Image 1: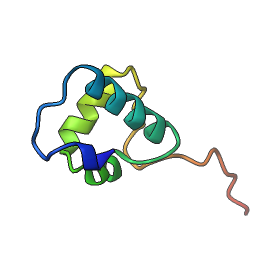
Image 2: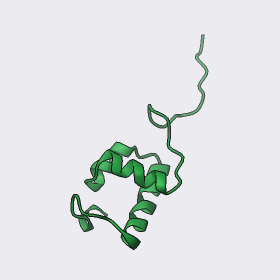
Image 3: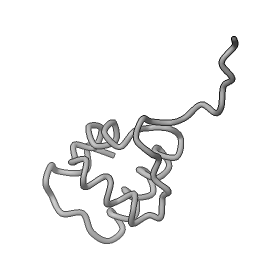
Length: 73
């Protein structure tokens, strides 16, 4: 994915839709916005905007949660 995009180039049309779909799939499978930004050579803000436009429910700060764990006392 990153090879086809020049850094700082404008992404429009079908290429933008494909990039948004790829980012959404990777984010939903646990990748962080920062990791996706580095992978694509884009800024954090760009990736965040693309995910928001794709209708992704963004995770809270602190990364993916692993569910509730009871502290053993």
